[in-house]
Image 1 (cartoon, rainbow, N blue to C red):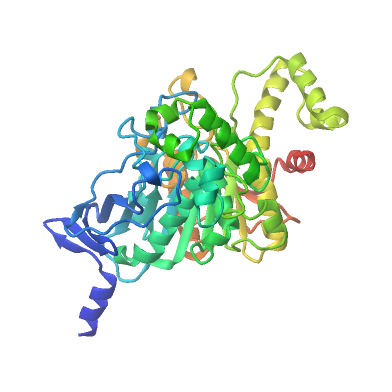
Image 2: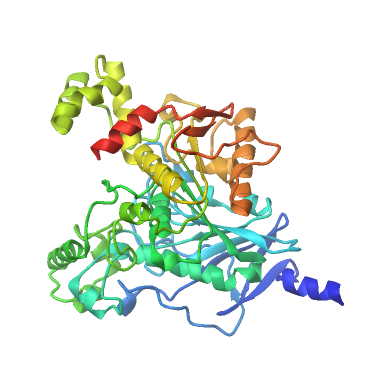
Length: 505
């Protein structure tokens, strides 16, 4: 009898002709089984944010009676149709269709054989808060599920649909603020995980959030927000953070955000939110203006993230973060003379100190320095400051990496080195999704990285006896794990550069 009870509790899937069915709070859903993993795609976690629900906090999903088939990704959030650019080929982009306002869906990959509750990884995509979606090929969760972790990927609203603020919206909201709907979508998804993940064999008390680029900025927001207390127990941030203001996250408070929203409405000749909600999604998408990034709204984020960490008021959870060697967002580098002049104009009396670390004495040096500065200003200094504050003030450990593997290329046109987003397919063991001439060393690196990541999700510590030891980061030793053909622990190579930039921010 005990054995039967055990199976009822910890084997949540009803299998009918290899078609798993799960009962969640809103109703029953069916998925598919593949290679020992059960997969459910396109599970609604909130009502469609359309009509009167456009620019409102996500509302609870309405229950259904029949079994809902969940075997295909839900629509990606409203955004321009994706087109490959720079280093991002089709594997790094969402499918062109469907793209729709009705986008609040999530996806679950879970081990079929479940004898105890599993740790959970909730993945948040990047895209500058203006694009992206959970249906991107590199976010496939099968390999992670095969490492005994429940993998969840979520959609959230982006662009002006996800972040518009306006005085009328603040007035109608019970919390007297507006904007940051994309972040509130993430909170709603985490609440769904808390309430439903046991039905998939997951442990709601062992949930790690992970994200890359804007997803990593979002992870920092979620760690700082009082709305996520008790919902997260670990955090992974790949190439991003929001602890300092930046071009991705400008220093804007509610009043400024509302003013931008009023100007946006005027661009559409709308004198009210009701009129703005009557506009089509395509009309909204085609209009310039409005806020398209997170900000300090007084509700989701009551004050600056820096202040929250400074006072040790964050969700103090184990943290794994890092950035890539060629993590740069820039076009063609400027000639050396122009580069030097721009540094002198930007940094004034401190320009000499900057040029000593980012030299421009030759064309080659100037090009390299511009790439390094782009990486360090956009991503490196965020991770560096975040890691330092958590290490010095928080109680939970921090693990820092540098991803230096320059991806193999079949042509000069696809040779972007260890580019922004390159590590994602390695971290989640998804090299099969990317068309590159992979080498044996790449598969070995992906196996090690995905093991570090899943170990961290399970225990808050990425290490095990099969791996090169990854030391805890602290502000005295600044040891990081360098991920390349060879994995090794080193002192942070860019320490002096990041120390200087952190004083200039």
